[in-house]
Length: 481
Image (cartoon, rainbow, N blue to C red; front, top):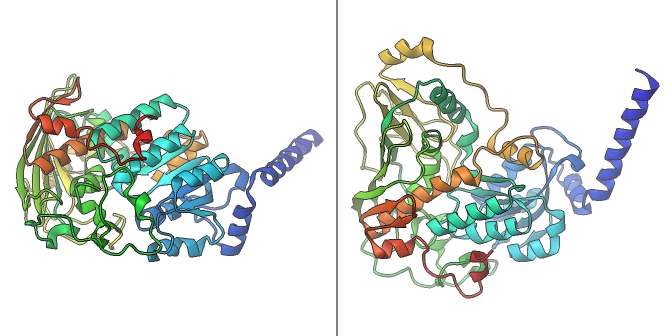
């Protein structure tokens, strides 16, 4: 090695060291030194990592903290959660005791905004919108859990904000969009294996939290004392006021129309994501509630069957997607379907691993020539029946491996090394499909939708619900950003 090359390498080492010394917050070096936790993916100099603030650090938010940290691509510079004393929150705080913590995301940005490159948002569905809008307005990259937001209009505004800040990275947290299913579906579509799809059956028939509740409910559950460590005001966010009840928090929020998106919003993004993207489905023209067992005005039905109709797109035929949820609301399967496997790689929920059902989460894709069977998240497709799969084996293209998981994909995109696979421009219309499905569930009716004007044409109340109820006083500003 010549002296010139030696000098260049020495200069680079000195530059990195100086950069690290001047840009790394002292709380990061303290935290790393005391926890002794090394990222599973290895070690990058702190100056080469993304400074990440995590908003929501319990339950799924806590999983997001560790999943991003384990890539080795980020510095954890701030934590924010409305309840810093909850058991699930303390689990994360014990691992990183010196990371600055906040209960109010607004205060976090006020005090530490100049030290934050990117955020993760792992909070209840109803709070995705205000946090995302503020983060983007402040120039922060955003990773937000699925679905993007709770109302059609909120998703619309989030997509608009992302377009307004094209230099910022966005990613929705449907992890399978960076795993084998994504790359297989893309390769099979491009090779003409998946073509002329006319119908899809999507199913999630495992037990849900509200399945033991009384659907004859006439009001919200009674008020209870607010836990001393919980900031209930911030937890409610943009929604109209509710008295605290333990059945509103820790994942129970998913059960209620006012807070969450039910089984469809929870699992739809893991089952229908690649179908929606690679078949260029966009928004439906019709959403028809075929079944709503246990329908009530407060929480989701015990069983739902929802028909989504999508029109012809260029040379692709119209597609009907029929969604089934509910323990006994099992769709029929075609001959040669075989065993319904439960993919062991599906991440556990906040209440533990998904339990096997009569038909495990997944989909059946019907095209004019072939039928495909698939699972959820990153699960790959298979051609059925087995005889047809053997016949097609030699025609299948090579499927590339993923260069990065969903979390690394986000952080590498923040560093300018990759593009996110589930940015708002892709995840937004998918999330809007779910908001329309939830509206059909809430009203237990059929909705006709104009894709051009983005209006519901047969139901005035439903059309108003595209925007939803006005935000609570003090939370209006996020709709004007």
